[in-house]
Length: 295
Ligand code: NAD
Image (cartoon, rainbow, N blue to C red; front, side):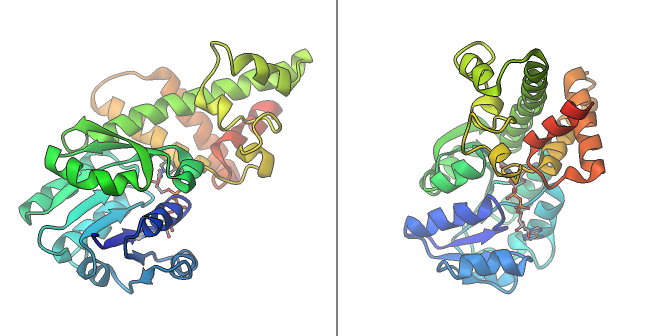
């Protein structure tokens, strides 16, 4: 069974690395957060002191980092993964990043004869914990097939989206839908309050009607109808608002680069920008209902 190096064991990476251990892989972790790395070490992972040490110990490297900036640092620096990976290693980045960063790492990996996949995920922390994530994998057929058993230990769907960067393109478009739909669901629940309609009744109707969507049925922003939703635990993430803002920026930047107007995406980005600037970036993105209610 291939040994795995896991970089970035936060809200998502932590449970994903745990599922790889459950599947029987020897896992080495690296994370600058001593607290996050330690949590995995106490669950049985080996803790690497550097990426060089992690790369030397791993047949496969998986990463779950905040953004393309950390991806480039972790993979492209002189003391990073690409320079120090074992010959023939498979590199899988599951973070959400810009398309250009994913392609730059794929290019550098190829020059060293390494396989690289951009394989961002959908499903949230609950999906990471339950190993039910969907992976959107961009890269060569051979790399996707080599990665499939590893991805299936952390999820239940792998969609090969096309060449390098296409996984990130799929993720950015998916989260554009998510950001806009969450604001729509929040507005509906706030309006329902004004109209004297309870959150439970609106949920009973919309979850089985044409308003049905993931923001409603998995992350309902009104406390009550979905017990596992962040709204029932003080809006602790979940999917942090600052991460949603990052993804909406990726979408609006990509649209701008291609001269395409995405008006609702742009508005959603501005609403999340204000929410994060007001100090709520670490709350779940569904907490934006609180500012919509106040306005
Ligand atoms: P997080 O902040 O909880 O975890 C990120 C981890 O990376 C942290 O432990 C941090 O210390 C570590 N890290 C930061 N810089 C690093 C570096 N240079 N080298 C190694 N480790 C580093 O974030 P998260 O919620 O786990 O999200 C991670 C990625 O997953 C993001 O790209 C996010 O957009 C994506 N994502 C998150 C969710 C979600 O619901 N949280 C869902 C889908 C995708």
